[in-house]
Length: 364
Image (cartoon, rainbow, N blue to C red; front, side, top):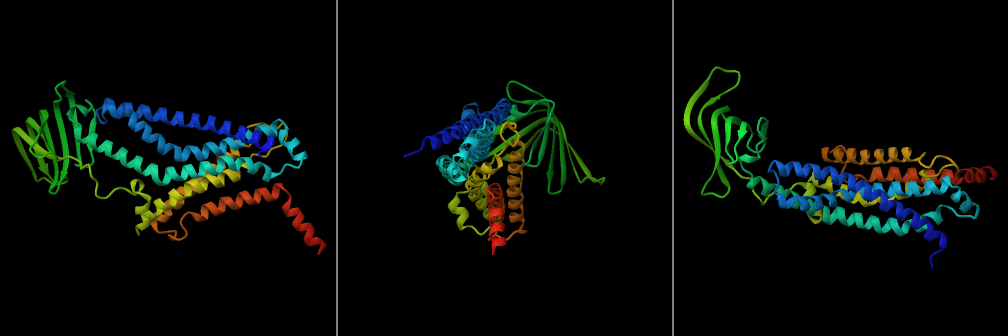
């Protein structure tokens, strides 16, 4: 049977976690919603994909928001108990860290398992779906997606397009086009341009009218100038089926079977997210300890600093793993071990374990 004190501590932490996670997720999704609306306005994404993109993005955010939300919730909830002297009263009744970790584990363990499932299975599928929606949007995009008066780059084709005006029919006027070719650089200036379909569904033509084309190598005087009444430039649409998906969008089982360093780094990152959730939960308890009547948020700054150091070390360790600086068998375990050691050391210091050890040594 659960004790009244256990239920009280669990309720305080759970309510704080729900509030903090909701606020953080709302802030992130608001920013993402603004970016998605901007892409829709520029015809970079279809209108009916707005909520799908937001939902898939929310899954991505949860893998980070849940750990930091739980970490901050523990510090806020226990900080309030310390501030109101409730924790001092509990300690007077011989309530130790183990009595705090017991109700905390009811929330910590399920959340760590849920985050692990999100990171291992759900998040990669969400990323793959987001990439697929983006590819389909690029395949459906036309010249109306070009913003007048601004340079638009196409990294896939290595081209830069500028148009002074975009008509309602989807054609553009006073066009400037630059792209790199095998023989150098090609610059095209035309009065207007339009897009045409071809028999190949994966191929389209960018047709320019009444202009000039300059071909040559920068830094030399060998240039060719061609005047034209109509000039068609073919470009291939991105394929929906990507034969080589990025590591972040690969299934976890495929990462396990891969020998690529980049895939190994992604695998260690996914495993590290639920581990980080557990370590942060253990670390938040000693970090939240403060003197009675001390500021409720006095330790929150230190907690945020520790969190940023933890995740920056994970990001640096991932980069070192991809670069071959850290062996694959070491992975990111050293980061989790370092932070876990810090948590255990703080618990030992706060509970006077070091003094008892020294006292036992002096007696012998």
